[in-house]
Amino acid sequence: MDLHAEDAFKALGHPLRVKIVDMLASGEKCVCELFEVLNVSQPSVSQHLNVMKAAGVVKCQKRGANVYYRLVSSGFTEMVRLCREAIGEPPPAPYLPLEDACDPDTNKLRTF
Image (cartoon, rainbow, N blue to C red; front, side, top):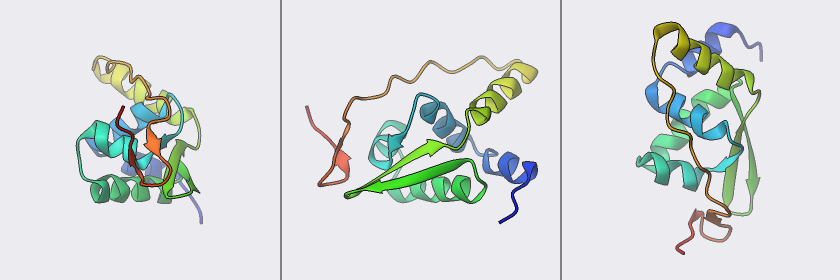
């Protein structure tokens, strides 16, 4: 598959996908953590992640019942940061990842 810059820009052309980049900037996340924190349905998050994966922005790895996503390159975080800087948008509040957030058997966030 040939990937081009326009594919990455298109993939990041949705506010939810930019939020996903912000979250993944701190490291890989399970889908269950993403949809819970973003407060959207799991199918919606998965659809956005598939667009990002097809564009070469993210990679995934399945572990048990859970699927974990990570950015292919920190360059995507930098790309979003530079875009925000160019238009004068303030950076988002830092995302603080949850430790061992997902239950490996249920693909849901653990309840503590």
